[in-house]
Structure formats: C-alpha cells, structure tokens
Image (cartoon, rainbow, N blue to C red):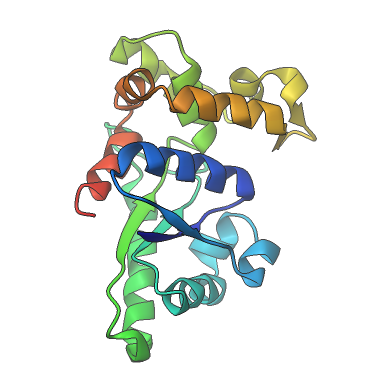
Amino acid sequence: MKIHIIAEGPTDREILKCLLILLIDTEILEIRESKSQQKNRGVRSILLEYNKLEKFLHHGYSQMADVILICVDNDNDDKNIQGISITRKNILEQHVSRFIGENLQYSYLDPKFVYVVPVETLDYWMKCVKSREFDCQIIRQIENISKNDIKELTYGVDNVHYGWIISYEAIETVKREIEQKGVSLSKLRCLGSFQDFESQLRVL
C-alpha cells in the first residue's frame, strides 16, 4: 500500500508512519515528501494556503498513492465533547473536494483520504503512550495540558531544543513504546481524536 503523508514536519511523519504500521495489516510503502513539502512546513501550508496544499496533493496523485493522510495540529481550535476537531477536518475535506473537482486528469485514480487532527499536537498522543495510567478518565486529563508545556512533559526538558525540536533519541524511544501494540493502543483509544483517526483506517 503506497501512502503519502502530508504533515507539518518530519517528526510527525515518523510518528504517523509508526502508528500506521501498527494499525494496518499490510506492507506500507511511504511516498517521500516533495521538495515543495520540504520547504513549506506548518499548519498554514496545509490548512490555510490551498495553493500549497494543492502542490502536496499533486505529488501524492502523481506517485499514485493508495492512501493520502493529512495531519494538522489543532492549535487550540474548538473540539467537541469527545475531543475531536470537526472544524479542521471539514476544512481539509473541502480542500480535497476542491482539488478533485479541479483536477479531472486524475479521475482514474481514487486514493483514500485520512484526516488526522490530534488533541492539539501529536505530542499529546505520545504523552498518552508514555503514561503509566490505563484509566481513560485519568488519561483524558492529558487533553488539559497547556500546549506550551506538552513537549517538555512528554519528552523531557533535555530532549526539547529551541522550544520545538525533539531529539532523535527521544523520538526513537517513543516509537519503541508505540510498538508495544496492546499497551499503547489501549491507552491511545481513550482519546477521541485517536479513535477518529483509527476509525478512518478501517475502510482501507
């Protein structure tokens, strides 16, 4: 299965690929980022600047992706009681519908789309993976942590540089913890945003 991941940065791509390997029972071939994706990072290039997202989508289609996964941070946007950002998902869906309508040359292709909007960032999911708690009521308290504090609380102060860069070693540690399938999934499924992500994968 060829998968094109559109995310805000390389760390997000690493984590999402690790989760996909855990959740999809088939071999995954990740399509490498285009040069445009490498140059244009952040939520604006995915959510707010359609012309840039359009370039990312062209790349996925040109590489004949079976699945195109688009991930954006929630950035304190509204969430429903389950912790899911419906607004951001709707914006992404509208962008994709526009792209399909404007690019009929790809009508013979029909990739599946997966939209990922975590609690605030993927760091919250990783905090969940690292938690020693298994009670969902307690785990969901992770959603209340300030976005300013989540990286240091998740990866440790010494592993966060310039306020946002996570050390390679810290990411590798989290990836190993994700791979403990039964443990990590049982905790992640306490979070509505992860449940929403996983439910979209069931149609693949």
